[in-house]
Length: 261
Image 1: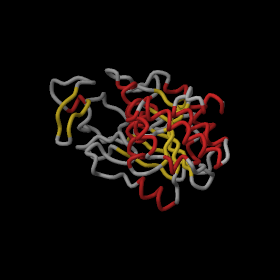
Image 2: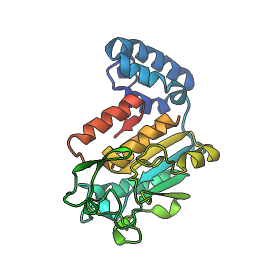
Image 3: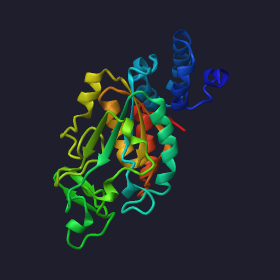
């Protein structure tokens, strides 16, 4: 592994995940050698990754890292109103990660009936069309995760009771919410950032549904807010609407999110 890293034959996001296995002095050596070659090959990507050097040189510990489990709810699993293919298959791995982390936060999509993001709320519209709203483009979805319904409940096999906090989002009738940190107007906070900072968390690991929407938006906001952020792709699944999955992965990598399988 070390030889591949120093020869620049390993992807940057894999490098950052691997750094946890090395001493601080060796991490410095690896980073400087890798970035020297990266500058010539991919300058834009290099600049994004340099922004998170400081976080990379620290090690996530039981006390500074939180696991954020995104929207593992019935309506996003097979048989649900907005099912993500194989969404239920991540539950065993998510449970393993919950067990392995001392600090766990869950998010829960929590829409009122007639929410503005539902296609049924707009005459003549069908799910997956887009409309223009006050805060920009909004994809219209099937009615899903309606407050108090079985579809809004966590998957029955999810070991969710360890969570210290559950963040409900999308409960404002006129604004959708993908990110765990902000509503889709990009201004209204959920309060998660303040909670994490007050608790002293600096490193976040994200898992859940869906990779290209709620997980991806949450990861990008986490980086923008200064958290060292990783996404465990083996514990996520995507919707992939009109190429949204590859777009989300590229945006996360460019922002300095560590993507691991």
